[in-house]
Structure formats: C-alpha cells, structure tokens
Amino acid sequence: MRKEFLRRHARVCLLAAAAMLASPAIGLAEPTVDTIAVNVDQAKLVRLPGKVATIVVGNPLIADVTLQPGGMIVVTGKGYGATNFIALDRGGEILVDRQIQVEGPSDRLVTVYRGIERESYSCMPLCQRRVTLGDSDQYFNTTMSQAGSLSSNASGNASAAAAAKTN
Image (cartoon, rainbow, N blue to C red; front, side, top):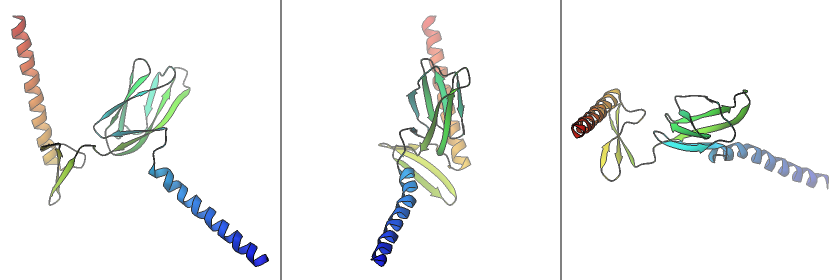
C-alpha cells in the first residue's frame, strides 16, 4: 500500500514539474492580450484609456510610440525584438505598461547572400529592392540613396507643378 502511494506521488510530482517547465514556453509562444504585435517598418494604431500626458519607450531602437490627440498612439516597428512602453498622466501615475513585439516583414521577402554581403527584395508580385535591417552597408546605402533621389525628384516636380498652376 505504501509503495503504491509513493509511486502515485512520484508520478504526480513529475507531472507537476513538467507542467511548470512547459508553462513558460507556452507563455512565450503566444503573445498575451497586453502585447502589441507590429511588423518592422509598419505602424499600428492603438487607443489608450485615460488622459495620457507622457509616453516612455523602453528601447526606441525596437519601436517608436507617438502620442496622437484623443488618446491614440502610433506604434512603429523599428527593429526586431521586444520592448515596452509606459503611459503616464500629468500627475506621473502609470496608466498603461504594455509590451511591444516587433516581428519580421509580412511581405514575401527574399534574401540574397553574396558571400557575407546580404541584399533583401520584396517579391509581391515582382521582386524589388527592399532595405531591411541586416543588409550589407553598400546595398543599404545605395538603395537609400536611390530612394532619396526619387523622393526629392518627386517632391521637386510636385512643387514645380504647383507653382506653374498658380501662375
């Protein structure tokens, strides 16, 4: 009788230990309701309760949080990983303390390696250059320079067209 009790007790302890070890892994696998999930290079709108006066971001290299009128915030994914933000009222009381999880791009991303050099392309439906964290410096700088030139030309042409229209 005593041996059977000890065997059952050992099984129960073993199951309890396994459940305790598995529970953190389960918690990491699924984001909680308090976690804001956003993709890198994308933004998400979130409504906050109360009168938020100050926003503090744990790691601004991972996410940016911008307070908008009416209790809305814009959460922008800047880098991969997790951080948090804290929203305070004018009296310094904590209104919200939430986690932000920044994940990889949601589009069809193709990564090309040339030795140790890395290039990224967005392939939806045609493959076009896409600057992604971790791309080689030369590829990153060339792509950003081209995008900047294109943007400047578009802005210049739009300004010139607007000026011509008013004359």
